[in-house]
Length: 420
Image (cartoon, rainbow, N blue to C red; front, side, top):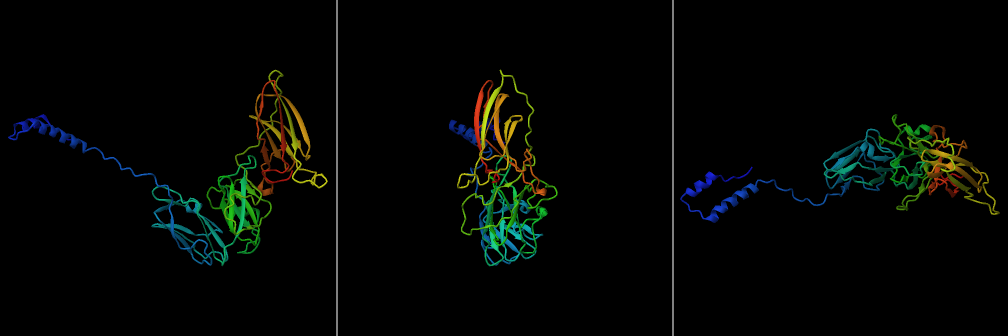
């Protein structure tokens, strides 16, 4: 689109009865140029920085911390329009809401409706996860935990811990952690069995990025069995397609009654739950031949089987017998050599010759069943996975060089808290 002044039009203007000065003739072209410019696409106005603020809750039908609640629904009104993100998976209730619970949006209001009364004298904790996002920018409303009670007081029990990969020692992110009461106070009878993981848990949560989890507002008049597993569909139980490793603690645990505790951060109140990576494989022992003396390295390795954690007053060990561990030298292709140790406070020295040059790692397997291998465990037989730890410094082997290193192995397993 544009405005064009033709040569014929100029001639006609020159022949007209009006006298046109040179400046007036120039103004014609100026006007034409302005007409052309007026057809350009307008630039979008600068809208300022992107909105990164999540929605705010303006009203709630059940006040945070309420008691004696008998409602059949709960609703929250926001200060802007929002969208729901898989509430069946992201919205977690402990204890679980009745079957048939629905989730819906009406204008700016999020409504959760359950078809029958909630359990009596129970504290309910709603964890929203990523359920709510704002409509325009997708900002997630995070960290929401809504608490109320159907009785006349909020329960005050708490359990904290960590879910750990036993072969790496690292915390596991986003694992489902579930509690099963030793005594079912609502329906009566013993609630714990191996198959409890196939039922919806009374209390459930997820681990954070470091593998830590926290249960708050628990009943303190019972002990709980604790289980952990991957839960892709978010329903707090193992579904037929989720037959994955299961982490567990063999004992039941009573909550810590701490109504005054609010912000201590991660606290290991119970032992770590060891949860295997289903894709993990144990290292294999290499059958290797020493290299020639002109192209091999030598390692002089010494280690100490730790004495701790306690000794008697006279200096004798309180627990002279120890569970074994296996010290292993690992290279890039597998385990080159290994040595068992089951005598606390014992000193050991080994000399290896003919090692291929390269980088090596020392690791120790806490061999709880003394079978000489690293076991992945089996939930159904009650056998937990074994653990291993690593020396902090790598060993660099060079041709025709001798390297010396020492490692003091803790008798108290830092991953599982077991005593070796």
